[in-house]
Image 1 (cartoon, rainbow, N blue to C red):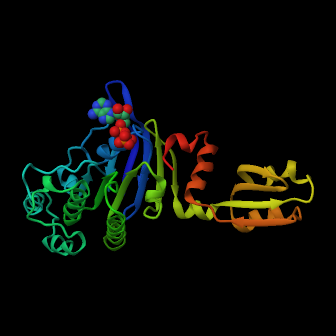
Image 2: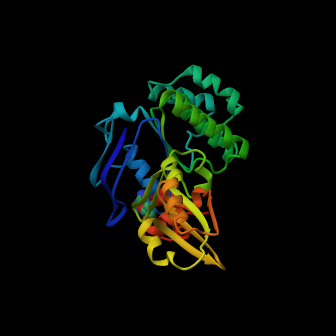
Image 3: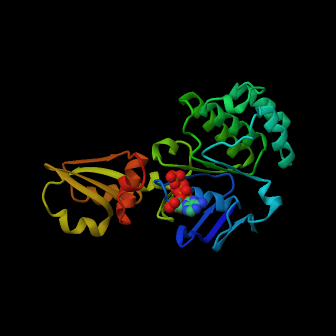
Length: 301
Ligand SMILES: Nc1ncnc2c1ncn2[C@@H]1O[C@H](COP(=O)(O)OP(=O)(O)OP(=O)(O)O)[C@@H](O)[C@H]1O
């Protein structure tokens, strides 16, 4: 389990991360969303023990991460710009990683040859951006880390490789409880990967949700009432995140148990009542509206 408690990280006087608390359970895939400068990289580097928090603490399985070498050997931070030593090939970088990470697996390194299909003898600096990213994933996964922190890793990978990498992450999370935190600007990019999503804005986590709970708990209702008698009482009986009206049809985004929500609307004897599925993007739009933010200003669609 990763426990971030009241973490603030300052650069001079500016708080890149501001009093942020977050708990991520082992084996979870957590999506960290936010616009440029929201503080995602700073948070990931603080969790990785690269930065020391100015306030608060980051603990993994109860132990502080900063300057804890034994713990840091179980964590990999994958930067948005992969770094390799000059003039090295993948095989040469593998020798280096093997020395640093005691959990390195030669067997895993060999197995991943079938997934990534890069020339292991070729100099990495001659490879394309996407190929370098594949190489970084190959090395990171061969280290068999307990925690993988991925800073915008999907960019630059083609759709087939994105799917492959997502599958590998699913598999590692399910089979050996790898914990993944993946940052992105784009909700759609990571919605099929994560079981939890948090949205950062100005160094703070403004929304944090379990996706299964979120989907089970938020509904889009289309309804045409017979008269206006619902107008006053509806909001007292169901939690409405958003409502709009087109002609005689009203659309509401509501929270709560589907059966109970349905019952509330049925009690008015409407002409039409439909419960429609919501995309994650729609859910977040209304969740954030509810806490006073416009999602379009905070994350890309
Ligand atoms: N090394 C640094 N020195 C000074 N300020 C920094 C440093 N790193 C980050 N910052 C500042 O901290 C804030 C958060 O930056 P950070 O890189 O964590 O955001 P981000 O959410 O990862 O952004 P992006 O999506 O653009 O990568 C920004 O205002 C940035 O200018």
